[in-house]
Image (cartoon, rainbow, N blue to C red):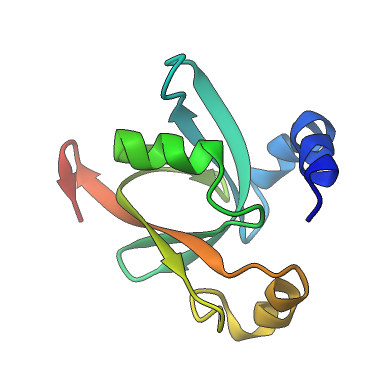
Length: 129
């Protein structure tokens, strides 16, 4: 997507979507700290469950918020009214979009989404599930 669309989404759409994303299926809000500022950020995302964790579709590629999560090694996800601690983030590039449900793969293809952030659920502080 053009950078202008990404900027508009970050400044306008994300503020509107954030409250809804916490409750809707396949959406969520990632809470993470800025690498340079240490400030807390809340980023709406498309998220999918997987055994032992979650996968986030990176609609704009691995931008700043993704780098923040990779740097910190953990984040918090609020999805469908639940708050989940996540760790062990790593990037996956998959042109076939196997990380998302089959019915949603054509949408990802239309948006040229092929990058994903794979995260593991944390059961106890400091331990991944």
